[in-house]
Image (tube, rainbow, N blue to C red; front, side, top):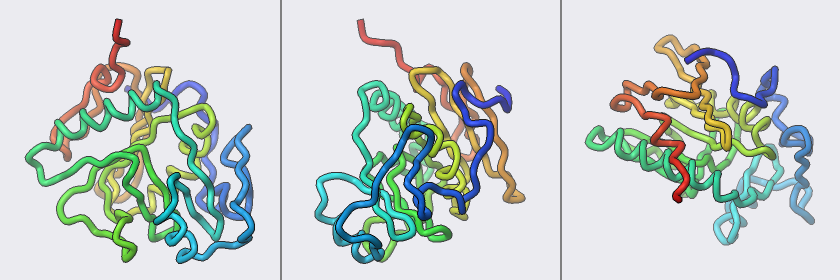
Length: 219
């Protein structure tokens, strides 16, 4: 384990204020998204009403709405393996794992989004919309070529503003590499990176072997 970033990582991480949705159009190099038309500036109420009846998921920030594309099989396989591993790890600890259907609202920055999955413990705090989770303790994202810079940059910074959050896992694929952002007791964050061994998450029950996340191909 070390502090070196996974292959392809951006050398710097933009601040929350630099998030691509705050007036810009870019989610990262080579990824351009356009706000939905004809409404130029959405209110939260507009977004929540639209999302309630939409067949696809959308991210919302600063009055702009962005469609979230579907994922490739490799991405989905890793996301599912991580969800199963977390579910086994936290069994009997008063925590529950959730998948990418669970919307998260970051109160501190106003971001509505859908991580690939995560964990919440104790009583779930839910937004007044009846759907958004407010108090996750762990969130994970499976990186893809189109979103890895955004996930590693602005999105992590949004996540770090959630008071309850203690872990953010950025899981690369097809490369075998996981970046673990961990919050200490004093509120500071550290980053460790690993390509072998196990993720140490003692406050959630122990560790998860990378072999549980990166399963071998079925012959």
